[in-house]
Length: 178
Image 1 (tube, rainbow, N blue to C red):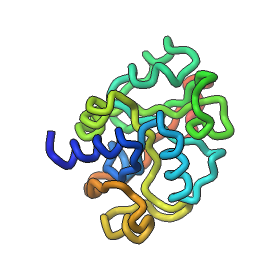
Image 2: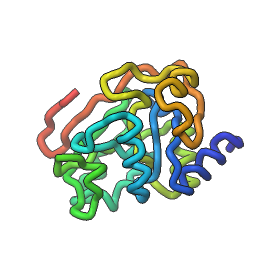
Image 3: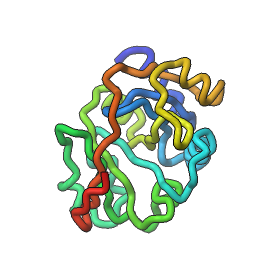
């Protein structure tokens, strides 16, 4: 594991907000145990807390504390096209994650950076696109600096393969939302 990844994990464990490439697009990340960090992400993005945030992880066991019925986690898989799944949230799950809904958004990935960050932090990552609400996503460190100034605690530069958002499926209803 390189220095960049170790330092990003250190920032996350200290309650920081980082920007990092994900399996889809450049994201903003923090750990879900830090409510103040999730609030920072929402403020940076000018995002309504009614929308909720995604949990991203390399293994479904990182999701078990956030879902009502853990037996449904067997249906959360890594697909060819990255997929975000909606499941009923556990009653103790932060409303910053669920927003105005009774579901939580979960995405499983085998992305090596995310795998390393989850392993070192022993946690799923809160993830949201690295942009201001209704603006294009950051594609460079310069974009990140323009959008967020010096508010981010650490930046792992975007990768060129980060281009598309994930599809979204409600596991309760089978509905394909995106």
